[in-house]
Image (cartoon, rainbow, N blue to C red; front, side):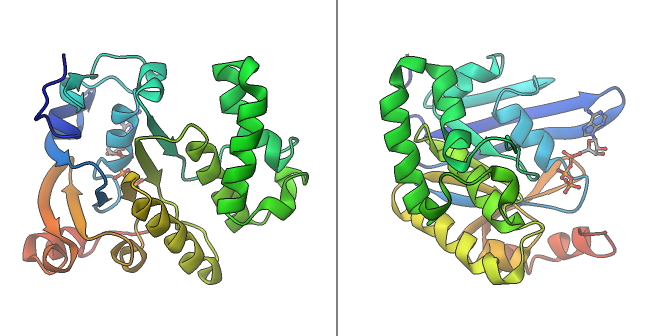
Length: 245
Ligand SMILES: Nc1ncnc2c1ncn2[C@@H]1O[C@H](COP(=O)(O)OP(=O)(O)OP(=O)(O)O)[C@@H](O)[C@H]1O
């Protein structure tokens, strides 16, 4: 049974080894309900591996992933989804030959085809929120890069997730659209969504989050208010001389 006083979400001593590569090691952090946190770090520091573990796509080598008091570390990916953990991918995984509306309804349909009417209503709600409603019947392949990023976000929103993990939502986005995506993320957080945001665009990350967790070489090296952490000499050193895409 979940403990009443348990944090909303935590990872404890999380590790993932690929043969001799220690992609993630002894990673621990906690999220409060409604919090928005940036997970940042230089290339190869273990951020994507962490997201893959906390959505059930990769099994951890060690450690716990605790969602509302229940350790999910050994659970299959669909159980994370059922618990309300959803993610986006850096490169949108859209069905290019389907319409914008159909793309949103695919995950909901696979949950229960019978909920068709509900899922279409939800899809239209999500499209209105993202201001993509005028494109509902266009093919996904006809969207601009930024619109595809928004639709990818929309797919994650369909099931009203309790924890939303955004993998590089700002990567490859035209500067004109950066503010729009940042505002959507801030608005979701204002509506109560708990969000973890991974991105290399530190300016954009800082415009959205108050707290950051910094990883380097698989380990957490800092955790706290973004403005303080980004001045931390160890964090500056971790970034210095490292390629950032
Ligand atoms: N399937 C795998 N097999 C072997 N090594 C892997 C695998 N996946 C990741 N790694 C290694 O684990 C380390 C962490 O990679 P990861 O992709 O999690 O970092 P990241 O912080 O997301 O990097 P980036 O910012 O470049 O996306 C890297 O050294 C990477 O090469």
